[in-house]
Image 1 (cartoon, rainbow, N blue to C red):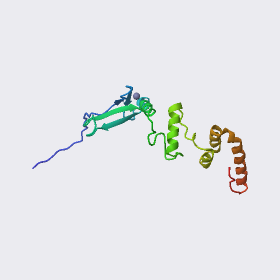
Image 2: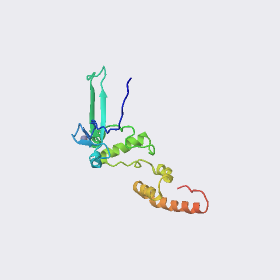
Image 3: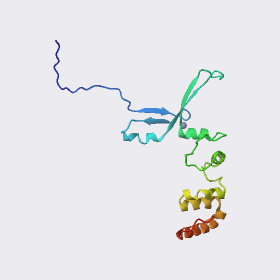
Image 4: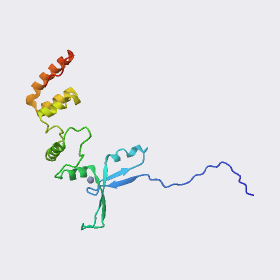
Amino acid sequence: MRSEVTELREITRLEQVVVSSSIVCNKCGKQAMYRPLPDKTAKDEQQIQMQSFECSFGYSSRYDNENWSFELCEECLLELVRSFKLVPQGFRSSDYDLYDETKHQKIFEHWQRTGEWEPFKFHSYEELLEYRKLFNEDYFASLVGKYYPERLRQYRRKSEAMHAAREFGGCDPAL
Ligand SMILES: [Zn+2]
């Protein structure tokens, strides 16, 4: 017969835990440190964001059987993308973007030249007007003012007429 006698005892044991990890950008050598939360001191260090890339090469390649992996910080990644001929799908886009592929490419090329990302730069005045209900009045007027300054007075006048018509229960006059 076996019997066990038990009592409550506190057991302390050692465990290996990750206290910090680091990723280095292969292009510029910048290092990002990551510490598990809730270590608040890691906040600043996490400002550097890294992306991982993996390439596997196949039979017809001169690098057949090689597997490359590397990290790029966002700054270096952007620099690389800026040298592309064609805009990467999804680049600086969301589901709400109001441009097609052709405009996306033009916006991209404009950004490559100037560093400015201007999603509405290549819309005609008429195309812009189609979106006016999606934006707040002042922001939309600022877009018209920026890209079609010669139409701004006309826009404001008709916009006021539109508001007046609405107040009296009428429908929107064409702008
Ligand atoms: Zn870098």
